[in-house]
Image 1 (cartoon, rainbow, N blue to C red):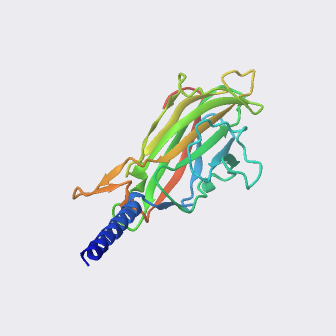
Image 2 (image 1 turned 90 degrees about the vertical axis):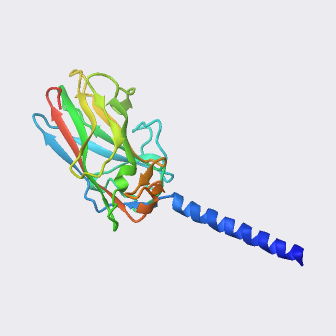
Image 3 (image 1 turned 30 degrees about the horizontal axis):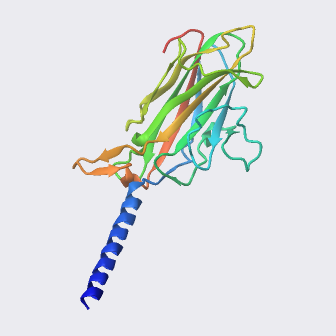
Length: 250
């Protein structure tokens, strides 16, 4: 009888441990939705010259980082293709991912600026970024890291090397904050058509990354790994600002 009783206690202990492990697993990931009703749009602030653009999203079922982006070599040929770029005719539809996502996932984009036939400089910024949620701590955006992956010139769909670190360009990275009025520069002073004898296009690749290493602390000092208490929130990104000038500067 003692052996049977010990076995029952052991079995109950294992069950409780499994339940605790499952509960821990459930609270380790912050599931939320990137909403497609945020009316994200590209706002062109054209000061002296005009340019056309094409906007692309990297379609990937695993939401992994595209470590070696090449637009034309990775273009989707059909709606069934995966791990490839699709053209987004209307940037307000840049987010078509309406299912819950988890820490570690990436969202990659590319914007192709068509040659304007003269030397000019482009700035690209993000703005009006905020969270939609039922809690007063609606700030899932703070768990997102943004950065420029690559900048390259392209001629006749042949893409050159990454030039984002070349002067006079400055590219930026960081986390979004809780202020909806903050403007986040992505890249500044990108030379458009540096050689006026060749009509170069410019491709800028950028990425949003849900950082799984972050921990949120509330006003009482309680910690929430991966911001997991914000599971019901939605990330809204309303504006991408494109400004073109005939000279460098902010």
